[in-house]
Amino acid sequence: MSEVKITPFSFGESDEDIAQVQADTLPGATEPKKEEEDKSQKTEKEEVKPEKGGLSFFDPGEEETDDEEDASDSLGLFGDKPKKEEKVEDKKISTEEVEYSAIKDFLIENGIWQDWEGSESTVLNAETFQKLWEAQAENKAKHYVTEEVSQFGETASQLMEYLKAGGDVNQFLDNHNQQLDVASIDVTSEDGQEKAISTFYESIGKSKEWIKKQINRLKDDGEDTFKEEAEDCIAKLKEELDSQRQELIKEQQQAQKERQLQVEAFNKNLRTAIHSDPDAAEREKKELDKFLFDYKYQDDGGTKYSEYYKKFIEIQQDPKKYHKLVRFVKDFENFEDKKKTEKEVKAKTFKFLRTSQETVSNFDEKTPVKEKTEKTKNNPQPFRFFN
Image 1 (tube, rainbow, N blue to C red):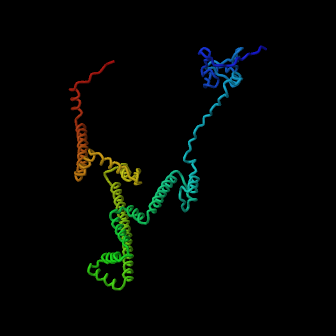
Image 2: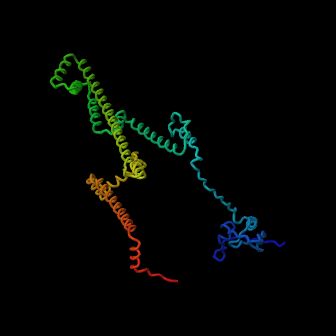
Image 3: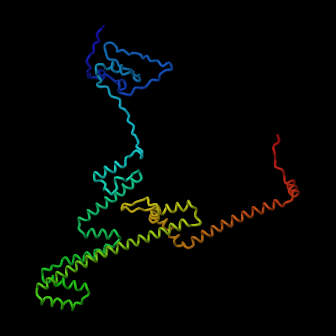
Protein backbone atom coordinates (compact mmCIF):
# COMPACT_ATOMS: atom_id res chain seq x y z
CA MET A 1 0.00 0.00 0.00
CA SER A 2 1.35 3.37 -0.98
CA GLU A 3 1.66 6.01 1.72
CA VAL A 4 -0.44 9.13 1.58
CA LYS A 5 1.51 12.20 2.45
CA ILE A 6 -0.40 15.11 4.04
CA THR A 7 1.24 18.47 3.79
CA PRO A 8 0.47 20.90 6.64
CA PHE A 9 -2.05 23.61 5.89
CA SER A 10 -0.72 27.19 5.92
CA PHE A 11 -1.83 30.67 4.89
CA GLY A 12 0.13 32.15 2.00
CA GLU A 13 0.98 35.75 1.41
CA SER A 14 -0.99 36.03 -1.84
CA ASP A 15 -4.57 35.18 -2.75
CA GLU A 16 -3.32 32.39 -4.97
CA ASP A 17 -1.79 30.61 -1.99
CA ILE A 18 -5.02 30.78 0.07
CA ALA A 19 -7.33 27.78 -0.17
CA GLN A 20 -10.65 29.00 -1.55
CA VAL A 21 -13.24 26.85 0.27
CA GLN A 22 -16.95 27.52 -0.07
CA ALA A 23 -19.17 26.98 2.95
CA ASP A 24 -21.43 24.57 1.16
CA THR A 25 -18.50 22.22 0.45
CA LEU A 26 -17.88 21.57 4.14
CA PRO A 27 -19.71 18.55 5.56
CA GLY A 28 -22.36 19.73 8.05
CA ALA A 29 -22.00 23.43 7.16
CA THR A 30 -25.27 23.51 5.28
CA GLU A 31 -28.30 21.31 5.37
CA PRO A 32 -27.87 18.58 2.78
CA LYS A 33 -30.45 18.29 0.02
CA LYS A 34 -32.51 15.12 0.09
CA GLU A 35 -32.44 13.04 -3.07
CA GLU A 36 -35.60 11.33 -4.22
CA GLU A 37 -35.58 7.58 -4.22
CA ASP A 38 -36.19 6.03 -7.61
CA LYS A 39 -38.97 3.58 -8.30
CA SER A 40 -36.67 0.57 -8.02
CA GLN A 41 -35.72 1.69 -4.46
CA LYS A 42 -31.99 1.19 -4.91
CA THR A 43 -30.03 0.95 -1.68
CA GLU A 44 -26.53 1.01 -3.08
CA LYS A 45 -24.64 4.29 -2.90
CA GLU A 46 -21.52 5.30 -4.75
CA GLU A 47 -18.43 5.37 -2.59
CA VAL A 48 -16.26 8.43 -2.93
CA LYS A 49 -12.62 7.79 -2.33
CA PRO A 50 -10.18 10.57 -1.48
CA GLU A 51 -7.62 11.38 -4.05
CA LYS A 52 -4.12 10.25 -3.35
CA GLY A 53 -1.86 12.91 -1.90
CA GLY A 54 -4.52 15.34 -0.52
CA LEU A 55 -7.93 15.95 1.03
CA SER A 56 -11.10 15.54 -0.95
CA PHE A 57 -14.41 17.37 -0.53
CA PHE A 58 -17.87 16.28 -1.50
CA ASP A 59 -19.61 18.08 -4.33
CA PRO A 60 -22.21 20.60 -3.26
CA GLY A 61 -25.73 19.25 -3.05
CA GLU A 62 -24.61 15.64 -2.76
CA GLU A 63 -26.14 13.75 0.17
CA GLU A 64 -23.66 11.93 2.40
CA THR A 65 -24.21 9.38 5.10
CA ASP A 66 -22.77 9.71 8.59
CA ASP A 67 -20.07 7.16 7.71
CA GLU A 68 -19.03 9.15 4.65
CA GLU A 69 -18.89 12.39 6.65
CA ASP A 70 -16.75 10.74 9.31
CA ALA A 71 -14.44 9.35 6.64
CA SER A 72 -14.02 12.71 4.93
CA ASP A 73 -13.00 14.34 8.19
CA SER A 74 -11.15 11.47 9.81
CA LEU A 75 -8.35 13.80 10.95
CA GLY A 76 -10.73 16.19 12.67
CA LEU A 77 -9.60 19.20 10.66
CA PHE A 78 -13.05 20.75 10.72
CA GLY A 79 -13.68 20.33 14.44
CA ASP A 80 -16.64 18.61 16.07
CA LYS A 81 -19.53 17.78 13.85
CA PRO A 82 -22.48 20.01 14.74
CA LYS A 83 -25.41 18.25 16.34
CA LYS A 84 -28.78 18.40 14.70
CA GLU A 85 -31.26 20.46 16.67
CA GLU A 86 -34.53 18.78 17.48
CA LYS A 87 -37.62 20.92 16.95
CA VAL A 88 -39.79 21.08 20.03
CA GLU A 89 -43.38 21.98 19.33
CA ASP A 90 -45.12 24.17 21.91
CA LYS A 91 -48.05 22.30 23.33
CA LYS A 92 -51.13 24.42 23.80
CA ILE A 93 -52.85 23.82 27.12
CA SER A 94 -56.62 23.93 27.12
CA THR A 95 -58.65 25.39 29.97
CA GLU A 96 -59.79 21.88 30.90
CA GLU A 97 -56.19 20.86 31.60
CA VAL A 98 -55.41 23.76 33.96
CA GLU A 99 -55.38 22.86 37.67
CA TYR A 100 -57.02 25.98 39.06
CA SER A 101 -57.15 24.63 42.60
CA ALA A 102 -53.39 24.11 42.65
CA ILE A 103 -52.82 27.67 41.42
CA LYS A 104 -55.21 28.98 44.09
CA ASP A 105 -53.37 27.09 46.86
CA PHE A 106 -50.00 28.36 45.62
CA LEU A 107 -51.16 32.00 45.59
CA ILE A 108 -52.65 31.73 49.09
CA GLU A 109 -49.59 29.97 50.56
CA ASN A 110 -47.27 32.65 49.19
CA GLY A 111 -49.38 35.51 50.54
CA ILE A 112 -50.39 36.78 47.10
CA TRP A 113 -54.04 35.98 47.73
CA GLN A 114 -55.95 36.35 50.96
CA ASP A 115 -57.48 33.15 52.30
CA TRP A 116 -61.22 32.95 52.87
CA GLU A 117 -63.60 30.63 54.69
CA GLY A 118 -64.40 27.55 52.61
CA SER A 119 -61.50 28.05 50.18
CA GLU A 120 -60.53 24.38 50.36
CA SER A 121 -63.93 23.21 49.14
CA THR A 122 -64.29 25.88 46.46
CA VAL A 123 -64.67 24.34 42.98
CA LEU A 124 -62.96 26.41 40.30
CA ASN A 125 -63.16 26.54 36.53
CA ALA A 126 -62.06 29.13 33.97
CA GLU A 127 -64.99 31.47 34.64
CA THR A 128 -65.01 31.27 38.46
CA PHE A 129 -61.22 31.57 38.60
CA GLN A 130 -61.37 34.76 36.54
CA LYS A 131 -63.97 36.28 38.90
CA LEU A 132 -61.96 35.20 41.94
CA TRP A 133 -58.84 36.74 40.44
CA GLU A 134 -60.59 40.09 39.94
CA ALA A 135 -62.06 40.01 43.46
CA GLN A 136 -58.65 39.26 45.00
CA ALA A 137 -57.01 42.05 43.00
CA GLU A 138 -59.69 44.53 44.07
CA ASN A 139 -59.42 43.45 47.70
CA LYS A 140 -55.63 43.75 47.63
CA ALA A 141 -55.85 47.25 46.14
CA LYS A 142 -58.31 48.35 48.83
CA HIS A 143 -56.13 46.87 51.55
CA TYR A 144 -53.08 48.65 50.15
CA VAL A 145 -54.89 52.00 50.01
CA THR A 146 -56.15 51.52 53.58
CA GLU A 147 -52.65 50.82 54.84
CA GLU A 148 -51.20 53.80 53.02
CA VAL A 149 -53.91 56.15 54.25
CA SER A 150 -53.66 54.89 57.83
CA GLN A 151 -50.07 56.11 57.94
CA PHE A 152 -51.40 59.68 57.81
CA GLY A 153 -53.63 59.17 60.85
CA GLU A 154 -57.32 58.81 61.58
CA THR A 155 -58.20 62.09 59.87
CA ALA A 156 -56.90 60.87 56.50
CA SER A 157 -58.87 57.63 56.82
CA GLN A 158 -62.04 59.54 57.64
CA LEU A 159 -61.47 61.88 54.71
CA MET A 160 -61.09 58.98 52.28
CA GLU A 161 -64.23 57.35 53.68
CA TYR A 162 -66.14 60.60 53.30
CA LEU A 163 -64.97 61.25 49.74
CA LYS A 164 -65.67 57.65 48.75
CA ALA A 165 -69.31 58.26 49.68
CA GLY A 166 -69.37 61.28 47.36
CA GLY A 167 -68.86 63.98 49.99
CA ASP A 168 -67.70 67.57 49.43
CA VAL A 169 -64.11 68.04 50.51
CA ASN A 170 -64.77 71.67 51.53
CA GLN A 171 -67.29 70.61 54.18
CA PHE A 172 -64.86 68.12 55.62
CA LEU A 173 -62.03 70.67 55.65
CA ASP A 174 -64.26 73.16 57.46
CA ASN A 175 -64.67 70.69 60.33
CA HIS A 176 -60.98 69.80 60.20
CA ASN A 177 -59.88 73.44 60.42
CA GLN A 178 -62.07 73.96 63.49
CA GLN A 179 -60.38 71.00 65.15
CA LEU A 180 -56.97 72.47 64.34
CA ASP A 181 -57.99 75.80 65.87
CA VAL A 182 -59.11 74.11 69.09
CA ALA A 183 -55.96 71.99 69.26
CA SER A 184 -53.81 75.11 68.91
CA ILE A 185 -55.26 76.72 72.11
CA ASP A 186 -52.70 76.68 74.91
CA VAL A 187 -54.58 76.08 78.15
CA THR A 188 -51.43 76.56 80.23
CA SER A 189 -51.66 80.35 79.81
CA GLU A 190 -54.42 82.66 81.11
CA ASP A 191 -55.16 84.01 77.63
CA GLY A 192 -55.50 80.49 76.27
CA GLN A 193 -57.78 79.48 79.10
CA GLU A 194 -60.01 82.48 78.52
CA LYS A 195 -60.13 81.76 74.78
CA ALA A 196 -61.06 78.12 75.39
CA ILE A 197 -63.94 79.09 77.70
CA SER A 198 -65.31 81.83 75.44
CA THR A 199 -65.06 79.59 72.31
CA PHE A 200 -67.04 76.80 73.93
CA TYR A 201 -69.84 79.00 75.25
CA GLU A 202 -70.11 80.79 71.90
CA SER A 203 -70.56 77.41 70.20
CA ILE A 204 -73.60 76.64 72.37
CA GLY A 205 -75.20 80.05 71.72
CA LYS A 206 -74.30 82.11 74.77
CA SER A 207 -74.08 85.89 74.37
CA LYS A 208 -70.84 87.81 74.78
CA GLU A 209 -72.14 89.56 77.94
CA TRP A 210 -73.00 86.26 79.58
CA ILE A 211 -69.60 84.79 78.63
CA LYS A 212 -67.77 87.79 80.07
CA LYS A 213 -69.60 87.48 83.40
CA GLN A 214 -68.94 83.74 83.50
CA ILE A 215 -65.21 84.26 82.95
CA ASN A 216 -65.06 86.84 85.76
CA ARG A 217 -66.89 84.52 88.18
CA LEU A 218 -64.49 81.66 87.33
CA LYS A 219 -61.48 83.89 87.89
CA ASP A 220 -62.85 84.91 91.29
CA ASP A 221 -62.99 81.22 92.24
CA GLY A 222 -59.23 80.88 91.75
CA GLU A 223 -56.64 79.92 89.14
CA ASP A 224 -57.14 76.19 89.55
CA THR A 225 -60.88 76.46 89.01
CA PHE A 226 -60.37 78.69 85.98
CA LYS A 227 -57.83 76.27 84.46
CA GLU A 228 -60.04 73.22 85.08
CA GLU A 229 -62.96 74.99 83.40
CA ALA A 230 -60.74 75.80 80.37
CA GLU A 231 -59.55 72.20 80.05
CA ASP A 232 -63.13 70.96 80.37
CA CYS A 233 -64.23 73.37 77.62
CA ILE A 234 -61.45 72.16 75.29
CA ALA A 235 -62.44 68.53 75.83
CA LYS A 236 -66.10 69.31 75.12
CA LEU A 237 -65.15 71.21 71.94
CA LYS A 238 -63.08 68.29 70.63
CA GLU A 239 -65.85 65.84 71.46
CA GLU A 240 -68.44 67.96 69.67
CA LEU A 241 -66.30 68.41 66.57
CA ASP A 242 -65.54 64.68 66.43
CA SER A 243 -69.26 63.96 66.74
CA GLN A 244 -70.01 66.43 63.93
CA ARG A 245 -67.45 64.73 61.70
CA GLN A 246 -68.91 61.28 62.33
CA GLU A 247 -72.38 62.62 61.64
CA LEU A 248 -71.12 64.25 58.44
CA ILE A 249 -69.70 60.94 57.21
CA LYS A 250 -72.81 59.02 58.28
CA GLU A 251 -75.15 61.44 56.49
CA GLN A 252 -73.05 61.25 53.34
CA GLN A 253 -73.06 57.45 53.36
CA GLN A 254 -76.81 57.45 53.86
CA ALA A 255 -77.23 59.87 50.96
CA GLN A 256 -75.09 57.59 48.81
CA LYS A 257 -77.29 54.59 49.65
CA GLU A 258 -80.41 56.56 48.76
CA ARG A 259 -78.88 57.60 45.42
CA GLN A 260 -77.94 54.01 44.74
CA LEU A 261 -81.47 52.84 45.47
CA GLN A 262 -82.84 55.53 43.19
CA VAL A 263 -80.49 54.44 40.40
CA GLU A 264 -81.45 50.79 40.84
CA ALA A 265 -85.15 51.67 40.79
CA PHE A 266 -84.70 53.81 37.68
CA ASN A 267 -82.76 51.07 35.89
CA LYS A 268 -85.42 48.54 36.80
CA ASN A 269 -88.18 50.76 35.43
CA LEU A 270 -86.12 51.47 32.33
CA ARG A 271 -85.66 47.77 31.67
CA THR A 272 -89.37 47.25 32.14
CA ALA A 273 -90.08 50.00 29.59
CA ILE A 274 -87.66 48.42 27.10
CA HIS A 275 -89.07 44.90 27.30
CA SER A 276 -92.72 46.04 27.36
CA ASP A 277 -92.44 48.16 24.20
CA PRO A 278 -95.14 46.79 21.87
CA ASP A 279 -93.57 48.32 18.76
CA ALA A 280 -90.13 46.68 19.23
CA ALA A 281 -89.14 43.15 18.28
CA GLU A 282 -87.62 40.80 20.85
CA ARG A 283 -84.21 40.98 19.21
CA GLU A 284 -84.28 44.77 19.30
CA LYS A 285 -85.21 44.72 23.00
CA LYS A 286 -82.31 42.43 23.88
CA GLU A 287 -79.82 44.51 21.88
CA LEU A 288 -81.00 47.73 23.53
CA ASP A 289 -80.79 46.16 27.00
CA LYS A 290 -77.24 45.00 26.29
CA PHE A 291 -76.30 48.41 24.88
CA LEU A 292 -77.39 50.07 28.13
CA PHE A 293 -76.52 47.58 30.87
CA ASP A 294 -73.59 45.48 29.66
CA TYR A 295 -70.75 47.13 31.61
CA LYS A 296 -67.87 45.68 29.61
CA TYR A 297 -65.56 48.73 29.80
CA GLN A 298 -63.61 50.06 32.78
CA ASP A 299 -61.77 53.34 33.32
CA ASP A 300 -58.53 53.95 35.22
CA GLY A 301 -60.46 54.56 38.43
CA GLY A 302 -62.13 51.14 38.28
CA THR A 303 -65.56 52.43 37.26
CA LYS A 304 -67.28 50.11 34.78
CA TYR A 305 -69.47 51.48 32.00
CA SER A 306 -71.49 50.29 29.04
CA GLU A 307 -71.48 50.91 25.31
CA TYR A 308 -74.15 53.58 25.82
CA TYR A 309 -71.90 55.67 28.07
CA LYS A 310 -68.97 55.20 25.68
CA LYS A 311 -71.12 56.39 22.78
CA PHE A 312 -72.40 59.36 24.76
CA ILE A 313 -68.86 60.48 25.61
CA GLU A 314 -67.93 60.25 21.92
CA ILE A 315 -70.90 62.48 21.05
CA GLN A 316 -69.91 65.00 23.71
CA GLN A 317 -66.41 65.23 22.29
CA ASP A 318 -67.60 65.79 18.71
CA PRO A 319 -69.31 69.21 18.17
CA LYS A 320 -71.12 68.04 15.02
CA LYS A 321 -72.57 64.97 16.71
CA TYR A 322 -73.44 66.95 19.82
CA HIS A 323 -75.26 69.45 17.61
CA LYS A 324 -77.44 66.65 16.30
CA LEU A 325 -78.11 65.51 19.87
CA VAL A 326 -79.18 69.04 20.85
CA ARG A 327 -81.58 69.21 17.89
CA PHE A 328 -83.07 65.85 18.86
CA VAL A 329 -83.53 66.86 22.50
CA LYS A 330 -85.06 70.18 21.50
CA ASP A 331 -87.67 68.46 19.33
CA PHE A 332 -88.00 65.40 21.56
CA GLU A 333 -91.76 65.77 22.13
CA ASN A 334 -92.43 65.52 18.39
CA PHE A 335 -90.16 62.52 17.92
CA GLU A 336 -92.83 59.98 18.83
CA ASP A 337 -95.45 61.88 16.82
CA LYS A 338 -93.22 61.70 13.74
CA LYS A 339 -92.73 57.98 14.26
CA LYS A 340 -96.49 57.46 14.58
CA THR A 341 -97.15 59.55 11.47
CA GLU A 342 -94.55 57.61 9.51
CA LYS A 343 -96.07 54.33 10.67
CA GLU A 344 -99.56 55.47 9.70
CA VAL A 345 -98.37 56.56 6.25
CA LYS A 346 -96.77 53.17 5.68
CA ALA A 347 -99.93 51.43 6.80
CA LYS A 348 -102.13 53.56 4.52
CA THR A 349 -99.78 53.01 1.57
CA PHE A 350 -99.83 49.25 2.11
CA LYS A 351 -103.61 49.28 2.42
CA PHE A 352 -103.96 51.35 -0.78
CA LEU A 353 -101.72 49.01 -2.76
CA ARG A 354 -103.52 45.96 -1.47
CA THR A 355 -106.94 47.46 -2.28
CA SER A 356 -105.76 48.43 -5.79
CA GLN A 357 -104.53 44.92 -6.43
CA GLU A 358 -107.82 43.41 -5.28
CA THR A 359 -109.77 45.87 -7.49
CA VAL A 360 -107.77 44.95 -10.59
CA SER A 361 -108.16 41.29 -9.79
CA ASN A 362 -111.92 41.59 -9.38
CA PHE A 363 -112.26 43.62 -12.60
CA ASP A 364 -110.33 40.99 -14.52
CA GLU A 365 -112.58 38.23 -13.20
CA LYS A 366 -115.81 40.13 -14.12
CA THR A 367 -114.73 40.88 -17.75
CA PRO A 368 -116.63 38.59 -20.25
CA VAL A 369 -114.60 35.99 -22.13
CA LYS A 370 -115.84 37.23 -25.50
CA GLU A 371 -114.69 40.77 -24.75
CA LYS A 372 -111.32 39.45 -23.71
CA THR A 373 -111.04 37.51 -26.99
CA GLU A 374 -111.86 40.54 -29.11
CA LYS A 375 -109.35 42.64 -27.24
CA THR A 376 -106.77 39.95 -27.83
CA LYS A 377 -107.52 39.86 -31.56
CA ASN A 378 -107.18 43.61 -31.93
CA ASN A 379 -103.85 43.58 -30.16
CA PRO A 380 -100.85 42.82 -32.39
CA GLN A 381 -99.37 39.37 -31.90
CA PRO A 382 -95.82 39.22 -30.60
CA PHE A 383 -93.13 38.38 -33.15
CA ARG A 384 -92.00 34.76 -33.05
CA PHE A 385 -89.21 32.80 -34.67
CA PHE A 386 -90.41 29.72 -36.54
CA ASN A 387 -88.33 26.60 -36.82
